[in-house]
Amino acid sequence: MKMPAVSVIILTHNRKDLLRQSLSSCLGLNWPELEFIVVDNVSTDGTPEMLQEEFGSRVRVIRRTVDSPTAGRNEGFRSAKGDFILSLDNDMIVLDPESIHKAVALFHQFPKVGLLTLRIAGVEDPGSPLREHWWHPVPFEIGKDRFHLTDYFSEGALFIRASTLRDTGGYDDDFFACFECVDLALRILRAGYDILYVPTIGTVELQVSRHENKTRSQRNYYFLRNKIWTAWKNCTLLRAISFVGPRVLKDGMLSVRYGWVDLWFRAVSEGIAAPSMIRRKRDPLPPSAWIRIQHIRKGHTLVLKETPQSTGHFD
Image 1 (spheres, rainbow, N blue to C red):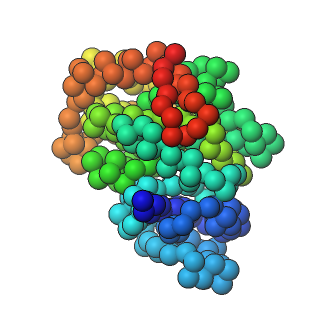
Image 2: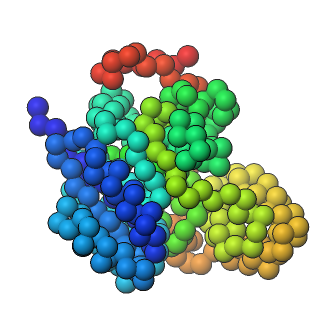
């Protein structure tokens, strides 16, 4: 049986030293048919030259003329030849050379799984996931070492089926950055796919962002605006209020305390008065999809037998 093709895509912008470490770890992955793609979002730090000098023809480089994380990821997805795609940020290291074997085995074992969200650890403790990336329905201490279905993934480290991207369209280019993973997760679940957290495929984030909502950052604006846009696109009015309301109030208090009230007002006003490009995409999830999401949020874990080819069951 022919092994499926796998593509490794790394998005980068002005982080050539971190990118070098990430790409070097990926080049050690064990898989017979593997392509490497770096999507360069207009780097000015010598990234393209470093890639040519140190990696040459082993890596295909897509040099963009516009810096956009969501559009950059999507351009990489469209150019990929693989049946499965490992998508990474430029500060992620893959720990296990057998990661692709593990991922492909899980995709074959669970045909409904469209995306695997990976364990993301820090340099100080590579074996334990970072709480900064833990937004899964299973409590951290219970779920960190267990397989479980989820309605969340981190865009920094994931495996995805190419068919999942074709059926969902990938990220929303108009979001630019922040919260795009939640919008895509809703569309993945709407399309009938599952999202599986995988504790046995580990990555390390070399540069962890912490406490960003306690500093003045444009990311605060994008996170809040895009959450409101996600509600615009995917929720009925009542569900949108419960989906967005707590985040608006929490961010409002943080913005007063940490000095980004103007960004909060801008995010709320531009989020509620969504532009036509967002309004045209409005298609609220049907009740059946929300029932499924509520079931996932009950936090079921998945028990697997020792061999990857065996079946699992919920406990």
